[in-house]
Length: 406
Image (tube, rainbow, N blue to C red; front, side, top):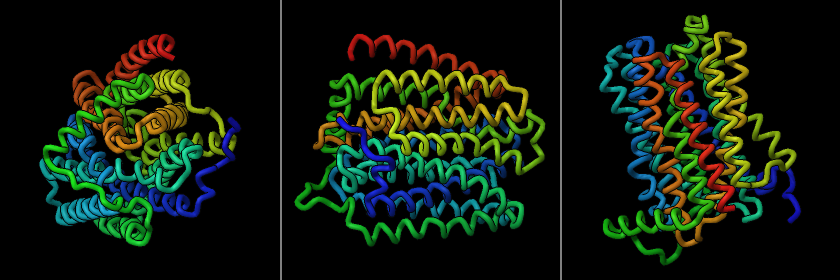
C-alpha cells in the first residue's frame, strides 16, 4: 500500500478546524497546570502533594474511561466535549478565586484536580471517536498523530504563555483570563456536524453500562495487537506517565534554576517541544508506519531518555533529554493508539478506546505514587530513574511476546 501523503489529515477542512480547537483547549489546560503547579509548590513545597496531584487528576480516567467510551458510542460526542470544557472553565475560575483571596489549602487543590480529571475523561474518548467522522481510515494514523501533536503544541505554547502571564500579571489574574480560552471550543462544537448523535441510537442504561465495559474488555483481550498496545501504554503510564511534570519546580531547583521562572518554564515545556518536533518530522515524511514491534522499541528508548534526565546534573543536558523523551513518547504513544483504533471493531470502537484510555491515562494516577510519593522518601531523581528502568524490563517482556504473536 502506498504511503499516505504528508500531513494527510490536514487536507480535510474539518480536521484542520478540529486540530486548532484541540490545540487551543490543550493550551488553556497547560496554562492552568503551569500556574497551579507553581503556586502549589511555592505555598506548600511538598513533593508528596505533587504526587497526590497526579493521583487525584488521573483516577477519574481509571474508573470512568470505559463507561465514557460507551457513552461516546451512543450519544452526541459534541455535547460530551462541551460538558467537559464547561467543567474546565469552572476549575480555572476556582483556582483564580483561591489565588486572588490567598485562601488555597491542600484539600482545595485535591478537589480541583479531581474535577479537572473528570472533565478530561468526559472529553478524551469523545474526541478520539470524533476523528473517525472526519477522516478516511487510510488517514487515521495521520489524524491520531496530528491530534497528539496538537495536544503537544498546547503543552508547548501553554507554559510559555502561562509563564509570561505570571510575569506580567498576577497568577490569579492570569488563570482567570485563561477561562475564556475554552470558549472557542464550545462554540465550534455547536457549529460542526462531526460527532453528532447517530440517528436511532439507543440510550444507554446503568445495566447496559456494565455490559459495555465487559464487551470492551473482551474485545481488547481477544485481539493480540490491541492487547499488547494497551499493556504498553498502561505500563508506561503506571511507572512514569507524566508524573515528572508536577515535580518540575523541584527538578529545576535541583539543577540550579529554581528561582528563574523562564528556566523552569523551558524545562517544563521541553517534553512538549520534542513531541511537537516528532509530529512535524514524522508527518512531513510519512515515517514510521504502524507496527507493534516498532512501538515497543520506541517505548524502550523513551525509558532510557527518561532515566538519563533523572540522573542528569546539567541543566542543558536535562533540557535536551526531555526533548528526546518527548519525541519518543509521541512516536510510540500515537502509534499504539493508531493500532488500537485500526483493529477495534466498529460497533465497539468507543468502548475499546475507553479501555485503552483507562490504561494509557488512568494508570497515570499511580505514577504519582511511583514518582511523587516514593520520591518524597528516596528523592525524585532516584524514583524517576528506578521507575523508568522497571518499565524498560516490562517492555522487554512485551517485545519477546510480540515476536511470538506477530
